[in-house]
Structure formats: structure tokens, C-alpha cells
Length: 406
Image (cartoon, rainbow, N blue to C red):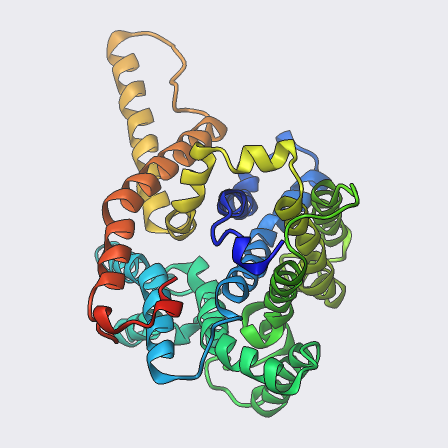
């Protein structure tokens, strides 16, 4: 298969986004089921944060697949590239971050401010993504948005990484050098009390691009491999299901890895870091390779138009599933439950409220979050994305070179 026949859009990979976002959702709310599930199962669900790793590997694949052959350090190309990245990521993040700080102002939610007495400064750190470099503030604003700092670092670095790979080769050395630079920063700043700026090795390895760059490189190497060899292959090895099994095997490994004092996840153990950042990335790469080169039931499910829509709206779901939107919906259901019990008291009956079960409410909130995500995607995110791409932001639309339209 020639390079020209490779599709630029793969529906199943869009469906994977929904899977990744839902895994993160489970990792944040597994506790709702409490003692109804064994402790070992709770530990297993707690490590479902691996949805973030899926996002990172996928980003590496997509950026390399779309841009590696035609990238340039030309000023116009770079402007168009940044324009596309801004159109995709920034509008909804900016709007939802404003909402988070406005709600925090009226509800006096100090978690959004990261405990700081300077909310304006924390807001500026959030909308500029720099909060992700500081351990003390990484969970401020939209807490799960820390991963966007990692993503943005990759977006800015990718053209330089591609240039270095084409000019000097030895692509495999890049993640070693990048993570090595992260270790140097920690050695320099770990004894400097600057709000946790590269303050320890665990933070660097789990919450910064310098520590997590291998996940992006895994996706990049997959993109380069399929660009060279195409989506067809002679063997029938079921990489989709092998990779899928290995993903959950890595989750199990982290769930049985000892949680160190003061930590929450097996992922934070050095063995957990190796499993999450390296072994898991390899498993996800196998899974993606299967989706690209096989026709499986799982691929058909992920490519289903409705699942594809969930995947397109999953970025918003990821941003709102934890924080003010979840609190609003959860609080609304609790208020509705109290109102219903008030009605029962006036009627003199002892009935069950449909909203008295935390587990049922979590399912309802999950459904509502998806519905809101789809509405926001269709009416705000997608129109803004298209508007920015057609606008003269950064570079005039009419002057875009043909090879950088995607």
C-alpha cells in the first residue's frame, strides 16, 4: 500500500478517545461502590488512570501520522501547525477554566486556587498551561487538565523532534535525552522551594512531558512503521486483542504494586512508573496496531458512528467529569432526592426514592455528562474549531500552503 492511499482519519481511533476518557472517570469514582466490591477490585479500578497514557500514545501517533512527512521549520508552516493545535485544544479549555474559577469564587472552593491566596495568578498559570510545571499547582483549576501541559509540550516539541530525527537519525535516543534532562532539572530544583517546580522525581516522571515522553514516542514509532508498511499485513496475529489484554495486565500489575507511604496509586511506585510509562505504552501501541491493520469486533464497535461521536466529545467529557460540572450534577441529584423524600413525608408514605442510591446517581451523572459533552461539542467546540481554522488567526487562511491544510 502506498503512502498516498493511507487514510488520514481512522474512526476506531476516535472511538478509543471515549474509552480512554471513561477509564479515567472510573479511576476517579470507583470509591462510590465502596464495600460492595472487594478491595483488590477497588485497587484495580483505581489504576484506570491509564486512559491518560492512551491519550498520550494516540497523540504521538496522530501528530506523526499527519505531519512527519510534510513538516517544516518554515515560519508559515509552524504558524499553521500551531493554529490547528490551538483550534483543537484551547477554546473549550479556556471557556471551562473561566467557568471553574467563577464558580470557585462564589462557592469559595479553594481547591480550584490550589490553596493559593492569589487566584488571578493561578488563573493565568492555568490558561497558559504553565501550572503543570509546578507540583503544588498541578491540580488547580480543572484538576485533570494537568495532562494538557504535557500535551502542549509535545505539540511544541514535535516539529523539532521530527527535524532531529530526519537530520541525525537515532530517534530512539530522543526519549532518553529528554527524560535525562528532566532528571537534571530535578537535581537542580528539588532543594529549591519554588512551588514544587520539578521538585521531585515522581512528579517529573508522572506529570511532565520530560518524564512521559516515551508514550508519545511509542505512538510516533507506530505512525512511522505503518506509513512505511501500510495497513495491510500477511500474518493473522490478533494484535488488537493481545494489546487489549496486555493493557489490562499492566493495570493489574500496578494494582498489586505496593503503594508507598503518602502515595495513592501503585503507579507512583518506581515499578509502577516503569509499568505505566513504558510497558503500558508498548501494550497500547500493539493495541493500536491491531486496530489499524485488522478487522475485529472491537474495531467495529469503536468505529460505530455513535461511539465515534462519543469519542469526538470525549475531550469535553474529560474536562468536565471532575470538578464544578460534576459537583453541580451530583448536588442537583442530591437536592432532588431530598425534595422527593419531603414529598413522601407530606404524603405519609415510606417509599424508595429513585435518587437515593449513590451508585445509581453515578450512572445518571455519567449519562448526563456525556449528553452535555455532546451538546457542547456540537454547538461550541466544533464550530469554534472550524472558525479558528478558517480565520486569519496567526496566519491568513488564504495563504496556507496546500501541504499543511490538515
